[in-house]
Image (cartoon, rainbow over all chains, first blue to last red):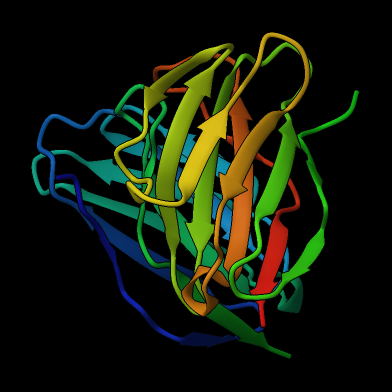
Length: 110
Length: 114
């Protein structure tokens, strides 16, 4: 059974800092990973996906994948209060049946 | 260009009643997934459907829960004889394809069992 583990947090960073969110996965054969953001009481929304080893940048967000270490991370540069949310890491390899971590709650303090 | 539509947004049921949750996928999407989220917990996969077929129901309790995605109309998640432990947010998601496709989530149905 696939497992995805995330630091439970909560993680608190000051405005303008870099927030680093980490995730490990159990299935060495997994290929595709997604980061979703979920505001309190709302539905998850996709913010990044990564399929290849290395870094992928999109604006203030950078996803990193290290398949050898079975490790995925999300960096948020210049963090803003509006980034305060729960971030969900998902292993989406299994024919779309994504396995989610329990999420890391991020608070960005003004 | 509507996204994934779920209804109702909130549903209150007494113990023993039935709950029916509806989901219309994003236009052009034929893959539908149901997830459950308990308070302060992550999303747990329940079932994956395509039109008229259940592809994977490994996350769905064997009793009281059922799901369908008919040829016409929305996908339905049905919970019979609800118990307080069924209180949760139920999210439907759809995707364009099966493999490596990101999920697009609906706004969820918050079920409260009294």
